[in-house]
Length: 402
Image (cartoon, rainbow, N blue to C red; front, side, top):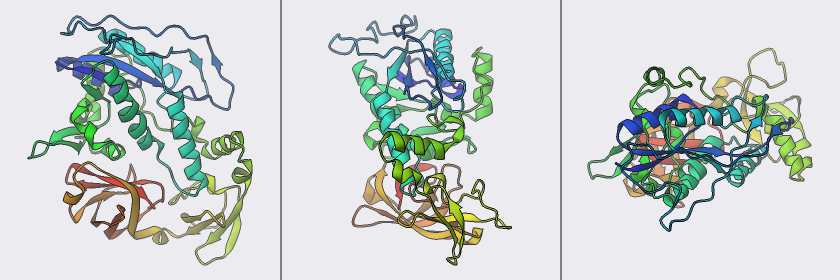
């Protein structure tokens, strides 16, 4: 039996993960990661009360108080406020999510904590804004996994002598022939989330648990209903947790203004065709991403896609779908979950979370970057997004598209 810190979002996946870990005989400590980022729309925050700890469950074999670290000191835990945010439900960190997670912890009789990670989330938000302002397409959920869920959460796990950190991601842990911990695709192809975990430090793999990755989503919902969890039919999160109603452009402009760089956020530019013809004006490159077709705010009589964003000229270049195709890419800031020298010359490569993996040749350049040449052109290769390489079901690693 091992002590496990589980990231609980209040959703069905992490809730069932808690149940599965208990069934496996682990001692589970539930943690809700609170970011406290307020919407531009007014919200009410009550005075916080002390974080609550449910007594250690009877099935635990450890008599050590999970609130104390190795030195007998109590880790500093943030209070969980009641936050009424009627405008902000689509993400994974709302007040109602926190209450759902708390109720699940009560139901399963496991300790439950709320950790104040305002500073860490502020870093993610700044990254999100800066990438869009530079004409790139960020992936804050990947960085959240890298910096928080499998970053800061390991620090907290160490403070309570927990051997493992677990989440409700649809991916699996395995072992190579040499006995190394490996990250694998989830059983449910339609829900696989291994792509968003590529940036985890390799040293953490031995301490990761991903219990729901062995199941398909319908089975997870059925299990939640069987054990009486109130989240059994709860909808999955669809949007970024700190952006209200998916209004990225307005959020970025507001954040830039607050940081004193309103001039960059307010500067518009031109829509141009790949031929160079100017066909309209836009309010800012922050509102667009490569591959985008809907919501351009311009009518041209036929479908056009964003094929390129030019930061220096602030031009958004539009073209036909065929002009989106890219046969090559390079990626920087690579992270490998295998020895770099063992990365094969060919493999499956995925350019977006919801994209199908495609075959390609992979070359590690002398400067540490990754070069990929695809067998078939890929549509929607966007600078700023992650590219992840696979050897069959195994995640090899990846980088950030240049």
